Image 1 (cartoon, one colour):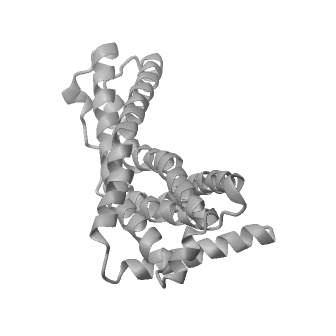
Image 2 (cartoon, helix red, strand yellow):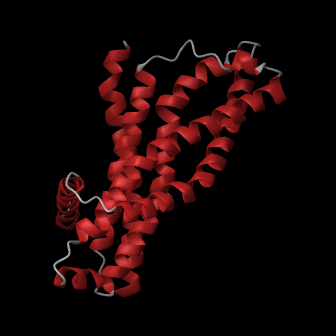
Length: 249
């Protein structure tokens, strides 16, 4: 890891620690949190529903064709895909989409404030940027990403059931078979969703607060936020899945 990358990593970790401490003490800034909940949750809901719906259609369509080719029967698609959707595809793809949409907005907004010296003005007024800017986004993201994950899973499930019924004639009651789902599946889903909800705004905020050099610096910070947040989602998905794997054996 280069010196600059290591400095950025340390700054992000320190910002995460500071934001976590700030989030544990009152006041929590209700109006600011509600505003960020709307920006992160409401404005992302349609995007998540459409994307996950198409994912459910494509995944079930391809799996159905493969099942027909190998087994001659597509009735078991739901039973095999639902656990994967709950513990893996639902939370991780939602996290990647949030990293694309939300991290971009946070990094661009805070980066613009940084290069126009609004962050310095806050510090001169003895106001902490962490309390006023990072904390509301962190709290809102932790609350909304699990909700968006559940919406995405429901969208993929409903559209997937409709797809296999229309194409393969599989009854929705047959598709909605939950025999292969264990308690560990929703636990893993929520662990991932909460982790993504905490990490994405921290990474994006750190990138925005480190912006330098006008609009070009804001663009670089935005790109860095999206790339770093997306890679972090993939890494956390691997770590949580790997940590829980022994409990499935």
